[in-house]
Length: 318
Ligand SMILES: Cc1cc2nc3c(=O)[nH]c(=O)nc-3n(C[C@H](O)[C@H](O)[C@H](O)COP(=O)(O)O)c2cc1C
Image 1 (cartoon, protein in one colour):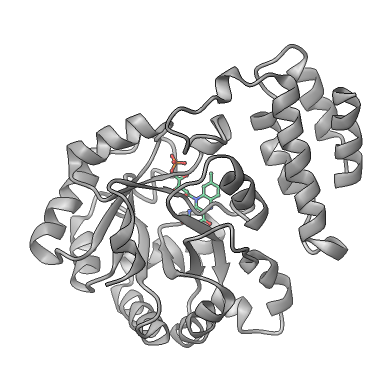
Image 2 (image 1 turned 45 degrees about the vertical axis):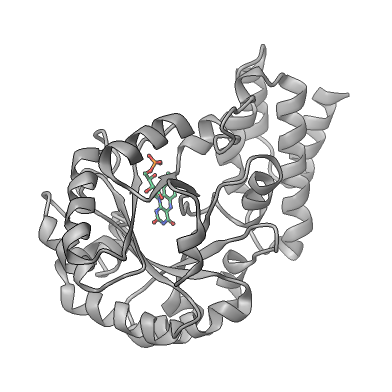
C-alpha cells in the first residue's frame, strides 16, 4: 500500500517538464490551483553521483507545500539509480519515477530515456536497482511512450511485467516527438493490458490535455487512474482548478502572479544557482490575453536578469 492508493480517481498530476516544473513553479501552483500529484523535472543520476552534483541539486529542491511529489530520474548506470533513490526519501520525496520516454536526440543517442525502449536488458537493470534503492519507503514508477519508431505494445507489456506501482504513458512514439495528436486509444489498450498483467499498477494517461473536464472524460472512457498535464499549464497555470478563473483574470492579476513567481525564483536560487533564461518560457503564459501583451512580451524577452524583469513588470503595475 503506497500513498498513490489514497489519491482521488482520476487524480491529476503535473507532468515533469525540464526547466519548467521546478520547486518555484510547483509552489506557485500549490498556492493557486494544486494538482493531486507533482513531478520534478528529470534529473540525471550519473551527474548527481559525480563531482558535477552541486550543479544538479537545485533541481531536487522541494518544499513542504509541493506534496505529494515524485522525483523523476534519468541516466545510464543502474548503481547510480540505486544510490540516488536511497537518498530521495531523506530529501522529502514521496516516490521515484524513471524517465523512459524523453526523445531528445542528445539524450537518446547516449542510450538513455526513450532509447531504453530498445534496450530492455538495461531498462530491467535500472528498474531493479531503483526498486532496491526504494525499499519499502518509496513507490517506483515509469513514464514512457507507446513505442520508439512505431507503436510497440510489447514494451508496455514488458513494463507491466515489472509490477511497477504506476506507469504513465504519453500516447505518442518517440519518433513522433510532439508532432501528432496523442493517441488515447493506445493508452486505453495499455490499461486493458494492465488489468490482466499487473492489476495493481496504476495507469496514468498523458498527452494534449488542456483542462480537468477533458482529462476526466478521457480517464473514464479509457479506464485510467490518473491524468498528467504538461503544456496545458502554459495555457492556464490554474488548470488544476476545476473551475479555473484564468480566462477572466485581467492584466493586473496575471502580471502580479508573474511577479510573485520571479520573486520566489530570486529567493529560492541564491548566487545564480539557476539561470534566468528558462523563466522566459512563462512569458507567453502570464503576458497574454490583454491589450499590449505582444509588445510587453517583446520587451520582457530583452530582459537579462530577474531584477530587470521585475522592474519591467512592476512599472506596468504602478
Ligand atoms: C518544456 C518541456 C520539458 C519537458 N521535460 C520533461 C521531463 O523532464 N521529463 C519527462 O518525462 N517529460 C518531459 N516533457 C514531456 C512532458 O512531461 C509531457 O509528456 C509532454 O509534454 C506531453 O504532455 P502534454 O501534451 O500534456 O504537454 C517535457 C515537455 C516539455 C514541453
